[in-house]
Structures are given as structure tokens and as C-alpha cells.
Length: 277
Image (cartoon, rainbow, N blue to C red):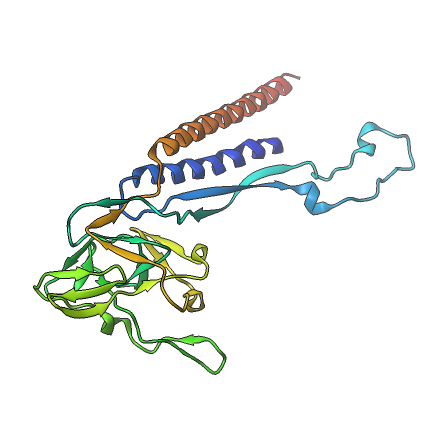
């Protein structure tokens, strides 16, 4: 029964929706987390096939001769993609100098074993070498020198990220609104507060980290992002609305399952009844 594919495709898409919303709910209290949302797309075979001429056979006409759809009536639902909502989260005071929140569109630049990544999660600490690191041990990076333009006009970064680690030692450190890092009375570095031309081009990697697939996406110019030391940026997930959406998605999934079960019962009865003749 080819019609079974319609509810089955809906079940697959709705399952992805449930998983996405459940992940949002699980990270409702994760600092700097940005919620995801799934987008669905309806596929109609008729739109792909387009219109055609009606074939009139030279014979005694039957009803099926006037309706040659060639499966043009088929349709199904699929997940067209998922996108991240980069809305600003609420800033909550902690009084802890190692907690730093961003107000604005920028990201902290960090160095991971897989390369440079970007995050809004500003829970820092100091490693054994006296360098500022994230709660996962990734090096926090300072600003790189101004990039240069190559012969083809593309941006070229000349400074390796390893050389941009921020050392504060064992002294008390402070961070200004502009991202200036001071170790005691001395300035240690300027935080790399990276902003992007298209924030939706970033790819979520997990653990509040993002990948920038194109260096040309980095915005050049004055930063509009401020650092608030002693604060954390809360997740932009509204736990109440997400729980409501999760319940609704689960109910939709269960409804589709009942439709599939009905199709299966009808198919079983058809086979058994035909077998009696």
C-alpha cells in the first residue's frame, strides 16, 4: 500500500521534531545555549511532474482511462532542515569573576583539539600554565592582528591561534566591557569577540560550540558586543513553551502511529479476505 508512506514520512519527521524539542528542554539551564527549531517541507509529486495532456484512448472508455496520474497524487512530509535561534539570553549575576556573559551578537573564540570554535558560554577557569580556558579546558583566544587581503581579495589570517592564548598567571584578573583582560594592574590581552555577517551560517557542533565554515563570514570592523564579568548568559529556551511544544509533538506522533496501525490492519484484512476466495 503506497499510501502508507504518507503517514510513515510524517512519523519520521515528527520524531525528529520531538528529539529537537527534547534537546532544547534538556539544555534550558545550560549557559549560552541557543535553541533549535525544525522546518518541515511537503513534497508533492504533482508539482514536480507538472501538467500534461490528457490521453484519450481509441477504444471503449473506462473510468481509469480518464485519470492517469502516474502517481502524481503522491505526497509526503520530510524535514527540510533545522536552524538555530541566536536570540540574546537573559544575563544573570553570579558575582564570580570567572563567569562572563556577552551582550550583543558576538562570540568568544576558543581553540579546541579540532580547531578554532566559537561559543557564547563564558564559564572560564585558569589552567596549570596560567592561561584562561573554558569549562572544557579549551584555550580562550585574544584578538588576532588585522587580517590582510590576498591577491584575489579574500581575507588571510596570518597569526596561528596557538599564539593567541591569554596568560593571566595566578593574579586576580578583570575583564572590561570592551573585552580588555587585565592581570592585576597590567593589561594581558584583548578578548577575541567575533561577530559574523551571517550568524545562521554557523554550524552547531555540540557542547555550546559553533563552527564557522567560511572565513569570509567574519565581520570586520568595530565590535558591538560587550562583556559582563560576574554574569552568565542564560539559555534562550523558554522551558514552559518548549514543554508545551514537546507534549503537542508527542501527541501528533502518537496520532500518526495510530494511522499507520490502521493501515496495517486494513492491509492484513485485505490479504486474509482475498485468500478465502
